[in-house]
Structures are given as C-alpha cells and as structure tokens.
Amino acid sequence: KTPHIDSCLSVIAQAFMDAFSLTEQQLGKEAPTNKLLYAKDIPTYKEEVKSYYKAIRDLPPLSSLEMEEFLTQESKKHENEFNEEVALTEIYKYIVKYFDEILNKLERERGLEEAQKQLLHVKVLFDEKKKCKWM
Image (cartoon, rainbow, N blue to C red):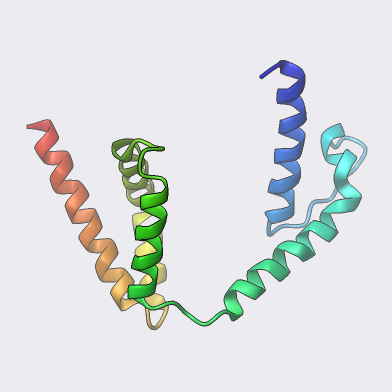
C-alpha cells in the first residue's frame, strides 16, 4: 500500500479504536489532527458499539455442542486460508501473557467452570508441545 493509503487507514483504525475504548477522551488544542477529524462522530460510534454488544449479551447462550458445530463449519470453510501452526502459536502467546488474568476472571464468574478446565487443559497441551519441540 502507498504511504497515502497507509495514512488514511491509520486514521480509520484510530477511529475504530476510539469507538471501542472504554475511556472518554478529552481533546484539546494539542490533540492529533486525525482524532479531531472524527471527534464529533465518536459518541455515535460508541453508542452503536454498546448496542451491538448488548444485543450479543441478550442472545441465549450457545451450548458447547452448538459452538463446536459452528467452529467446525467455519474451519471447513477456511481450511486452506491460514497456517494453523502460526495461529496456534499466537493463541499460546496470548494464553501465556494473560493466563493469570483469564484464569482469575473464569474463577470469579459462575457457570464458567468448564471453560476454566478447558483453558487449563489447552495450556498443558501447549506446554507439552513446546517441551517436545525443544528436545
């Protein structure tokens, strides 16, 4: 991509990040121009984001079987589009980086005991695989 397109995409990306941000930004004279360009639109975007997540929260929960079936179908649709090894490595990095936070959150929330067990199981599998690669 050209530098001009890259700059435009950066402005759009910043608008998305601000729309999804949980903190309110106070923009003054020193604020970057790209933030000032869309500052008046951010409250509207934030409301749309809140409405979107509320609609998701209000949906009935999926069973493990429904979720597994959905993921299997999605996997089949995209089976040759990405490198599974790289994807799994990225997931592992995320799990390692945020493991304590994720585990603490799962322990505090009721009804997520199965997810907690699955997280622990996945981490053990990754750790074992990592050990085998190093040997």
